[in-house]
Amino acid sequence: MIDFHYETDFKLDGEGAYLSWIQNVCASEGYSLGDLNYIFCDDTYLLNINQEYLQHDDYTDIITFDYTTGKVLSGDIFISIERVRENSESYTVSLKEELLRVMAHGLLHLMEYKDKDAEHILEMRTKEDEKIKMFHVEH
Image (cartoon, rainbow, N blue to C red; front, top):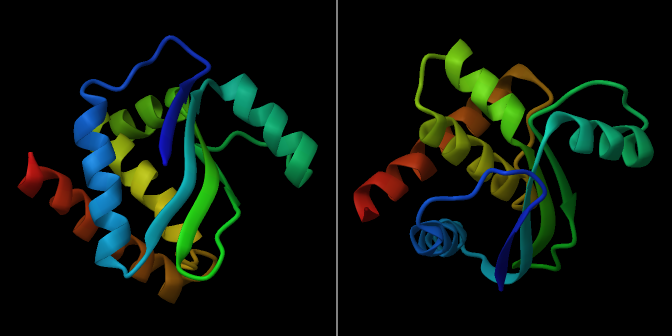
């Protein structure tokens, strides 16, 4: 089950399209869905989580808590809409495009993709691009 939670004034436009896309992304990597929560929030909300649970004192666009068991994806994916907006401007892409990238990024972490070194970062970016294209093909 996929749930969207809003801790800010942001709302996804057309949640159904995102639900379908997330299910297809999971299936494309051989996973099924357990309980998946996307929590859209602001910088302050995510900074507090970063400080409390990860002991990091910096802003980030996403924090993923992984509860996956085997090939059944479960987790909480917190996304700062403020960071996503800023990143979309920095990278000169649409807000929707950057949001898809970050949403896919969280899913890929649940699927054990890493991004701590150059080789893994390249693999992560390639997978993000592949998953974003799936959204555009479907809709």
